[in-house]
Length: 368
Image 1 (cartoon, rainbow, N blue to C red):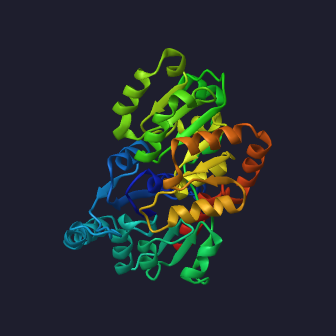
Image 2: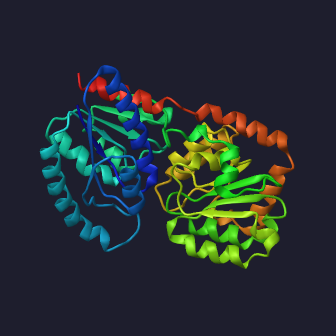
């Protein structure tokens, strides 16, 4: 059986692909069916490194992105997207998949469209509580639309929609505090704050955290995922701290296998509100402060408030993510362990550990 993945972009789209790939391999082994994979999409360096680490062959093709602000790239992307479609057509014709899995975002458009032209059964997944433009467009070409939030089912029509939840790092819930102590050189003298800006880092989150480190280290020990582009800046910040504070600040660019240990160690998480980040938080049952990005179509903001609605998170929008407010919220939560415990318990409502399994099973059924 040949499986085409149509995806790309950042780690938030690639990690679910990896989870589904592992479940497909497990089912193929049970059924004694040989299985091959190929990903076609627009990839950044994080995405490429993840695919290579998990033995997923890929062909990089450009997919036009519609920006919700003025940019000359919107015009030039029309021609780039057409060229990308022709490249995708060639790669997919050579591979000729039996089924296609599209993981949303503009990078999935070429693979899903060409699969439809070749009449390949296709399942796409919408992870956000507000569907993106790409999946709204691709929904009419897909055989099945799997969704992460129940309220999205009505957008695509209930006949072709399957509510499965969201998936992320396949083993995100299997980390240990002991391994975290070794990996990050934690002291565990204070509660551990995990700060996650996404696979590329988040400028506003990084800068605010760096500005309050002298005060922050009075109450917490920090694991800070800064993004690969911000390693040098994080190093300079760490070196500028006095030894008593430096030993409580630990940074990393991007984590794959060790991310589970970071979550295992965390007593509180500050994070963006992408679907993968929220899934990490829910599967590891961590209380969180969510900072939705403001330049998307409202997906992260909607995701964050869905979490707040069930009492699992506190939302701080970017204008309110200021040093004074952030320090106040962290201090307020740490002084109320009963509130942290309640937030942790509520995450179970959005925890879907079997999402990748359900998608893999549906992909197999499409191939019958």
